[in-house]
Image (cartoon, rainbow, N blue to C red):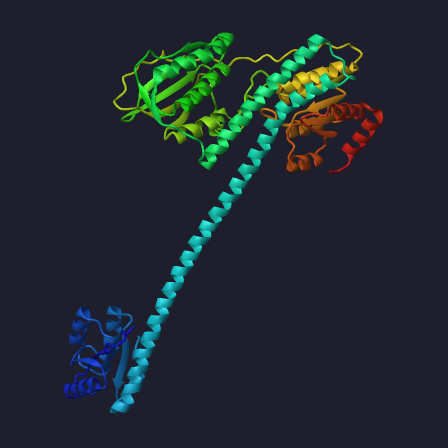
Length: 557
């Protein structure tokens, strides 16, 4: 577009030099900046060096005529406005010139009063085209910006949905984990407080011990949840200072040695090296204790744990804790640092919150360090942290290299030996405290015998073999969960009619709604109310209830 205050530049081409000169003079007087040439070749040469707003060309010229000139000029400058001058007998040729890009034509001879409106219209058309092109460019730019904004919004929406889902899963898992120790505390407390549930002094002492154990577990869980919340909110206090690594190793060794001795696991620490870390002493010890206790608990019988220190990048040290346990699959490695995810290891022989590794990783990152894991199935796992050194390069020793090992076999606690005339209840549960509580409740009743399984597959096998009157089913099981286990029981004609009572810490509204759509006979949430528990068993054992339940299972869903 012509900028305000600037004279429009017109290139005039006419082989009649007198006419060309006169046009240049007249148009200058009317505010135009004109340049004239007597041939199309000369005009094109100038166009290659300079830009013009309008080309006013005669149609009939020797050499390059007006049509060829317009076509060539517009190839050099597509925005150039072109007007053709022609005699009366050449109107058809002028129309042809307009087809190749000329905006208008004027018939010779003409007066200035006739030419000026033609030039004005051509320049207005040119300005309009330029404005339209600019608007189209802006529209395309805005469309691209809008598309980019929509992509960002979609990404943000999906991220919000993912975060919301993770929050829901976290809350559901947290509810489950909190209710599990509460079930032991309140369940055994109800037995102790009840006159209708007799117990000997020795049994009462044992029940009190279960309550203390569950209370300590609950306290640990709450503290770890609070630490996670502080890290997420950025309020976890962290004091980075010089930490003597040899002292930390000695303290950790002292604290985990009894557990290692109990499991028959050999501990191998590196020799003293006089290294100092740039870290928070309490948090470093917290992380190492978590890694060491995991390496001991999930090791094979008479296995080994190796602690190794390796210099990495300048002023950084990698501390690795390796075990000779079963190792982790690729799928397990992908979920290893998720809160409450115990990778199917939440069996009845190991206590744990499922928060240790998630919390450790966040603590390590809060110390401006890194944490990772390497593992080989059937060989073992190595968890490592990479921490800054307090000045100087490391000169460290290492524990012996770990060897291959196989996974340990976990032996579940024995169920009480019942009388042969008693009806059978199967309890599918992977938590020791919950199993002990229900074992006592069944023993106190005196009319039932209890079988138990610690995972869904074993539960299905026991149900097929023993045909229990009732199955008590936890939902949060390692591997196959309670819903899938129920579906497989229903699909097997041998077990399809058995009443299944859900006994679970999954107490969120979504969990309860899902259970109502399933074929559970009852849905009991932990902590258990013993009266409700016994009433649910009585209803499930009632022949009329069995008949109604069997008829309901035959209805389409």
